Image 1 (cartoon, rainbow, N blue to C red):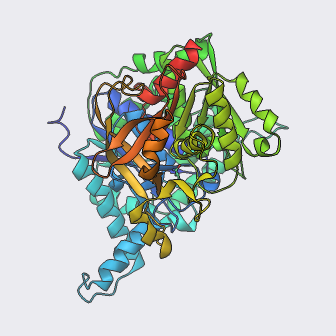
Image 2 (tube, helix red, strand yellow):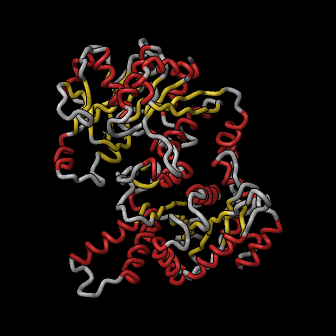
Image 3 (cartoon, rainbow, N blue to C red):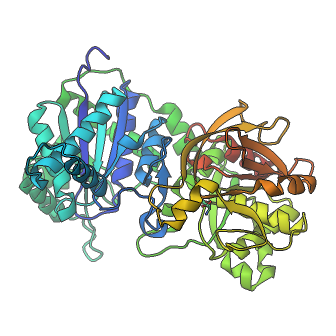
Length: 548
Ligand code: GLN
């Protein structure tokens, strides 16, 4: 197959009519389908906003910031690609408008354009194309899926469409375009309407691009009549209009596409042949299990973030949710999530007793003061009542504070993130972060990406991993304060993992004799968990929940 694929092929995925259509899942599913045919596939996301990365945006407005192994804060879709393809992507696999312009402007300042007039319509698409091709080159992929964020016709994604258009001209036979479009169903007529899709294709045409495929997002499966209509008005062959109707599980979409021969059509257009694709194990675990499992695991997510506007908590914590689901499915059960606003525990302490209704409690990452005292109350309750607990990043830091206050007797223990002058900063800002905070140097400056961790032997967590030296992804500025290590250990806290180079505490736990599962990790295991290979700390949590 490799011999056949001398050149990388590029498939652009863009959206029409409205945003939030699931382009990321469409992109991931096309990628998965091609991977199932034996190809080496990668994917990249383009976000048309000015932010240089996704790290400075509010997760309740934009969704989760997904951190790559080499430490870039990217869009949640990059997480979808990693999960669907089970590969690790790099910072190259993400691009924003801000990143592109910044690079061009910096180059101009360094005289690298050798005195030329540097122009948006020439040098910007050139930089975009260079970045897209670079992903193909570095990954040696047979296919690069390129998802362009936003909707066709928006001022801010025009320049990316222009880059795609130029690539198609300069690389004949190597570039295809798929437009994901929306078919509304007006409540009075109950009929799927194709006109907005027709208009979106005209808009794309105005940018010089004729789509090769149209993926129709709608409530119901697309019928022949509407397929014919779209085909006629949009000049796309009937077989190249793919129904991408709503289904229960995002993991079912690759086989929805497969049933319609989408992968075959892509290969035909590129003039390629490949072995048959097989999605059986994928479907069995990720589609059938959640549908058929009898056992339900109730997971309580305790935090402060709640739905605002278009985005919901599940967008803010998509990787955590998918990791938990994967761990539950691996145990042949299905997951039920409840969002628990910690602020209510601040006003009414007794309300924490509702945590007894859950099989496991998770406190995900977070920042700032809001809801924190309520979270600490919730953690205390899970610790004292043997409810399996997993704390991720902030969830680990707050578990440390709770333990310091209520077990080690350090009553005013806190983090300097909330109380900069606290007497007992059991969680303190990292040394290298101090200057960055003092100079308001916030963008992309946290401790980000992969760092090593050595597991302490005979701990609960060490028993979950298959190795002693692990690598995990990070995103934080504050850290367990080593000045309190001895005192907390003496009170019974177990330090289960250490970063060997900086001697930073990466994992805390309680011994199994004390608690069925009480684990806090400074890193974000959710970024490394995969649907078919759930991360050990999630697996451990769910196992404890089932045993309970
Ligand atoms: N706010 C904490 C810190 O910066 C935790 C960050 C997180 O949960 N990602 O260290």
